Length: 85
Image (cartoon, rainbow, N blue to C red; front, side):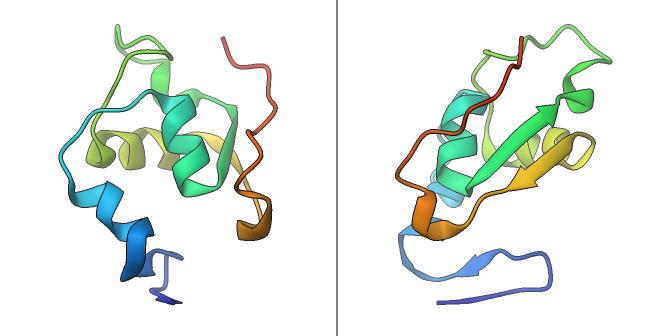
């Protein structure tokens, strides 16, 4: 699999979950995207709670405004560990 400049996958199962229109909790997006949100700044400025399900576009916007840790793909099967609210 190859990726674009932002590290997004092109093809395979990874990109399918982004386009399916489903909502997921941030913890679910973390596992799917191999990201750990260390400081959820993207959730600070409105009434959206950390555990509220969101679509990928909203996840991407909120994640971009947050402090994150990228997790190696081979560790993706293990859930991320963090202290988010």
